[in-house]
Amino acid sequence: MTDKLTLAAVDRDGAIEEMLDKIDGEAAASRGIFLKKSAVLSGGLIGGGALLGTLAKNADAATATDADIANFALTLEYLEAAFYTEAVQMGALSGDVARFARIVAAHERTHVAALKKMLGAAAVASPSFNFQGTTESQAKFKATAQVLEDTGVMAYAGQAPRIQSTAILKAALAIHTVEARHASWIRHINGAPPAPVGFDKPKTMQQILAAVTGTGFISSGPAMTASGSNPSFTG
Image (cartoon, rainbow, N blue to C red; front, side):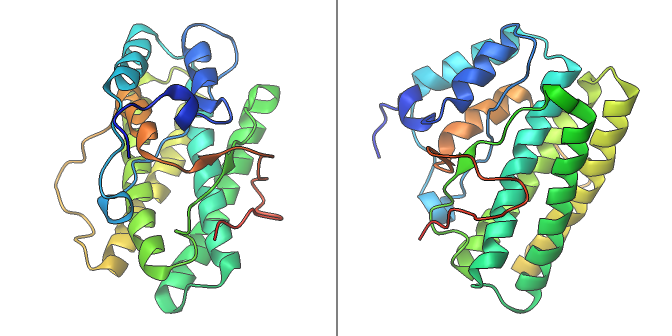
């Protein structure tokens, strides 16, 4: 991998660029995607200090609206719903891992539906995803799911204090607690401490935007539906 990472190389369907436009003051919200790929899968994060600096500067300079935050959450839920649904349909999982994936896939699709209903016409469309084989291997699935769930918990915790709308805050907190249960569940399956610390550390939008450059899960092509129909398997 090269240290000279460009926005075009990561953001092949325009998701991050659109997010930055919206953070800078557009009325609609972002389509940014956030997931730090674990070292197990990637051997480390992709470089790109200049891009990270630009993302961080834009995130720090703006105050996201409630709709921005809700759409930020919706995009993560799109990713999770697609990831778990594809993993179930690929048929590579077994035992407790397969049961975990089936239940969490249903939860994530429900989260997508709830957020889209709440946002109405303001809801962003789902990007398309390429999970690079992580849905086709039980070991890779388990490692990715733990990173995904831990990141999601920290993302919700970071944004909740910024929400002004009571309705959106209630929705975010209701989802956040379920995501925390998912995180504990997959950690237990993986033999990791389900609750490793007494206090979780939230992640800011700046940190989540930085983490997006560590994933290759955003792909070009038609967006996959949140229902998981006709997923683009990524062998």
